[in-house]
Length: 512
Ligand code: GLU
View 1: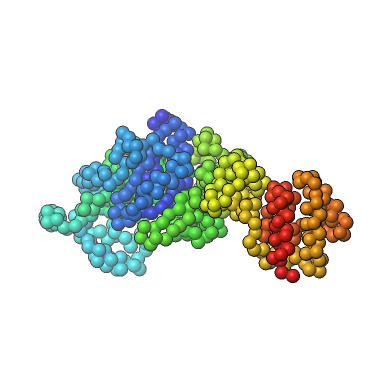
View 2 (view 1 turned 135 degrees about the vertical axis):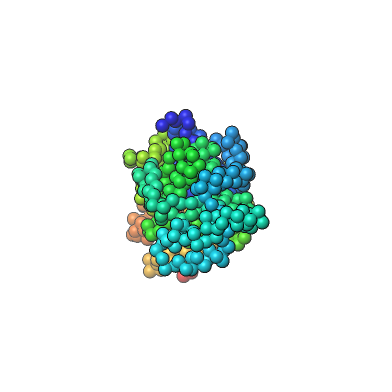
């Protein structure tokens, strides 16, 4: 393999937001190209005008940029093989469709939608490979193979709608060597005469994809497994267009599965499974429905990339945390598995945690500051940084920073009722105990971890109580729940004044 010449492409259709499986495909293309010093291209496949969704192209570009996946040639920066949007290349496809008709590998078909429905209805009891537009049916339909030559010409001259279909050969074995799946052999009779081009001037995906991969000198097609069934058709197109010698190599990536392994993780899963399936938040321009994204849910892009890299690939070692540069260094298609990869939301959070804790406290403090500004609150930077330092081990996603630490900035307004019932035990005279604890704490000289620790130990012994019996209710008054870091750490950071105030307020508010 001549590394210099490697050219791969990511070719999404702007029919909606990019699913995480799509981002993974883009990532693997990117890693493969960078690994081999080749080029990676972003091509927008927007020939299906009925499924075009405004905003989707921009969304795709923004998502990939957020991940740090960059392209050498794309719709924004252009390049020597442009344009990179298929809707701007339609003149090319017509020419190649005509060439296929001329060489006898494709034909005109005039069937109306009603006639096609009727054919399918008549065939519904047939075996699948017969129940399609192909060798079994085509001579009974209205096309340039079944109609007299003059009639075909007359219909075209009269401006009748037509499509150009590939003429699939009978009883031929179509072979391709997939870099991940090995040799794939398909009987041509299982394929149908797919539409390649329509009289309105638009090609279908299959034709446009092959023409562009050829003209853009793509060497490797790395894409999702859902395209594997189309690959034999693509092989035939390369052959019929005379491009077999420069046909790219194929690598079909394993499916992304739902966490329980039951079926493909699809766009429709949205937030239904409790985690996002899109990189960025998406609001549907028609239904206005909002689907959550990894970015807005508080994932760091480097964690997201690491998560995706492991959904199908593994390094063959114990190492799990990989920077983009390390992925580029170690990625290879040989280490991409054939079997579907289950998405594990728990593991995804674990990855994010690993990256979050590595970020400097000062940087994470920035996220808390934003929350404070929104609430019109102001605290010294040193205090915010100390809070981050104390809680960051408990944080998986960025919003957890605030959710696990808000009590450091806002005293509890209510007390968790379930926790209260558990820990506020009147039989242990808890209110009286805390009142005297408050009184003695007020008199303490100095306020640091050692002093507080010594005092609490001593208080417990003198009052003949247990650690938990004092600390759990105390935590409830300080935090409002049973959450948070160690009570003594909380006490130190809150400072003596605030600590005492929360006990006072708590004792006032707590029902008898
Ligand atoms: N436009 C196709 C898609 O949306 C591209 C498939 C391919 O890579 O060939 O996935």
